[in-house]
Image (tube, rainbow, N blue to C red; front, top):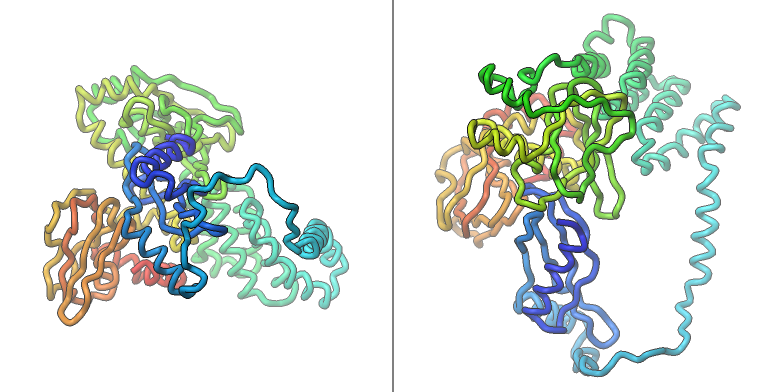
Length: 491
């Protein structure tokens, strides 16, 4: 599935369901708990305006999982009428059947001045780094204070943000604010650790060591990140050391080794391309692979790195014929891998079902990680925090329509993330609320140890990710305040 195919599915649905009444506009990739999806904005083009009606969502397997209805269209029209008043909404569809003009008059939108201001703004922004460099070299306190005000403007550049954070830490150190400097350095260290940039992480650690001294540095998060990154980079000797194959019998590991090919990959080489047909899978033996996801704006961002023992490419084994890669995988240094054809592993799975079960679990966790890394609320969490959340997952299950998901009056023992479907919450003296896909069920009560007063019931068949409430509560108790704040915003 790619954007063109997703747009085609949406267009066919709108044409078959609404004729020419509704039109599809922007289509963008969206990461949901159930996997990759494409979201298309739907409008009703009438007179000289477009009325937003809703959206369509296509799953990576080709299913339409969210659609628009006649009720959505009616409500959109009514909303326009309520805001515009009856005089300006007499006949919204008056020109619907008229052919579009082949040409039109030249129209001035009166934005020439705004464009000039924007261009000037761009010209002023381009030499910002040069200006910062000049001010830093001057070294006067007033210059450093000005640099402090300018540097945050560079944080929007995600590919260089970690280096900007180091600069911000350096400036605060030169201004005598060691506590604030350490906060910036720790934030930079988290990003370097996510990308396994050990040399840069060592530089940050050396600065933190000079500021803190040996005793305090030993317990500092920057040192912990450095130690973790170094441990992760240790090569593995055989496939049985990979988590996805660990614990299998020697004969089973030998069978897997028999269909593997050892490869050495140059830095910068793309092993898997998001949107391309999924035919290969890999286990890292030594080195680093980065995982890059397409953004809604059409770019890509690094969401994590894979280290020795990690498996990528489950879709090549588990996906339907023609299934596509859900992420781009790139070698970040000279990397040694074991490569597999997905069809070979799939054939082995018919003889050892545990292999397919493990790969399915691995794919579910990778999908959930992609969702957390791209979700507007959780995307600020670093890889370590996401991994701790993922460690609280105890299963994925389907619930039937009208199934009760909790025991009223008791503290939740599990928390659900709705991957597909919807769940209704009912309580006395309160209207029934409906929670759709990507909603958390019971999270607040589980974190605070509160009894849930009402009932959560599946409104339809649902796919649910199940979390252990006690593990989540323990994680939240130890987590930094900013992470706790993220959790509170989720529910």
